[in-house]
Amino acid sequence: MTPTLGAVLAGFAFLVWELCSWYPGTKALRTNLVGCLGSLLPFVLCWCVGALTAMVVGGLVGWIGDTALWGLNVFGDGLLVYGVGAQTGTAPGSTSAPLTQGGLLMTALVLAGFLARRKRGATGSKWRGWCSGIGLALSAGVARYAAIPLASAVNLSGAWLTGVVS
Image 1 (cartoon, one colour):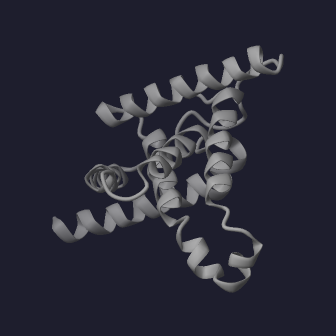
Image 2 (cartoon, rainbow, N blue to C red; image 1 turned 135 degrees about the vertical axis):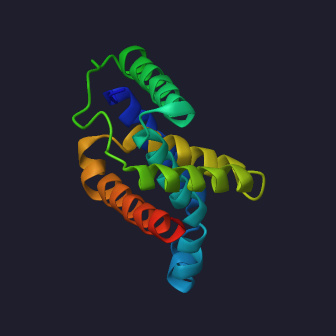
């Protein structure tokens, strides 16, 4: 599945929503920058999980990622067309990022951890991160700086893990 401008809009909307709900104020940022940025860590990690979900092309996880991306495409396209009167189209990017067998194994482990930890803490923030990662991961500008290094890291760690276990 290829992202449309609507999915990119939805991904950025979830990102902006998270940043607006997170923003502690300039005084807090000046006094405790590391602590304030640390509270964004669950969102960022869940964004990475969403990006990995969008990169999987087969199996149940691939179907979930395609269905979520399709939903974000439809929702965002609807916002563009009926909300502001814009035209929609395919966003520049790729249909998927290549994950090796080891990368797919690591993605499955990361998703298992995501599902196991989803009941604690700020649940809304984590789902906004996951949806934002799915909507933005395959767009060209984001894939260049985030999804490709993420896919490379997962592929490399998966190759290491399968080499150690085998």
